[in-house]
Length: 389
Image (cartoon, rainbow, N blue to C red):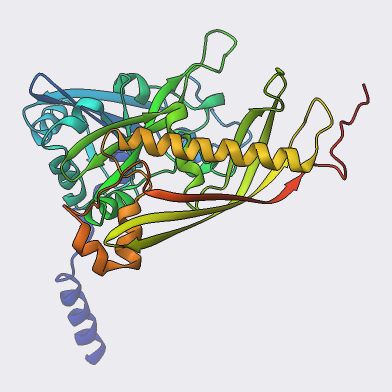
């Protein structure tokens, strides 16, 4: 009798337990991988990239694409007076529940960044309970729809694409530092209240058997501040950024061996270490910059000396740092976050000089720029060519 009472009590209690009745099965959901936001004629235009996980699950198997006819992703498009209205219009044409927890990146058009409500858009994305702070952020002037429809080289999974995981190629070259939502929030909330967002373009360097292939490429940054969009630094004008922080894994500089010759040399630069020291004098602040790095020669056309190589590297790196600084200064951009350097190291002086989190900067604010090439590795024991001419 006692056992029966215990059994009945257990059954009655189990009826009060909550189950998984309200949980949506994984196969009954669509998963967002990328989101594009544009702004045209007073309306927001959104592009939603839904990923097909078939290729993800089989990417390392002997048959990476068992169904070559299956699309890796589809892109939906809708317009609205607000971001939310555009999304709800798009939801009307979607068959299943949409899950945002796997979204890996977001792309803004130039017009969306210039919109006065750009920061509100970021806030809306962050406030949604399923989104994460590690979402990568990009900007572009190319058609967003075209970018979202680009497939990775060799038809690899979208989760391994450059936009989905920009750290994949960081060891090869760190031309532009990736920025996620966490970096974005910190950069906008702390001095200098500006952040450089990687600028993406469509690249046509690759070809397939039947047609010309496309991929994305990082070509600079678009600078966003708490007061709005500042402008772009593209291609060569953005090159100096990679030498001004310690997170650059690898980069390159190319220069002439002799001003009167056509021979060029490319060197790989690694182990970048940067120290920025604010110097305060008579309520004026300047900055002394010390950059240390290692260089490796991958190949050269004639015999060269280590001294000659060091001199050329120092000249080229200095030129790129100053070029980027001056191009940014012309757009009122503190590209090297010198305001933050003063804020961290001498907050009393920063409080006296700052205005809206930034300090006044001029072309002479970098009073000293020292480049030290710690090591020049020729790849051999001597600086001579492998083949004698």
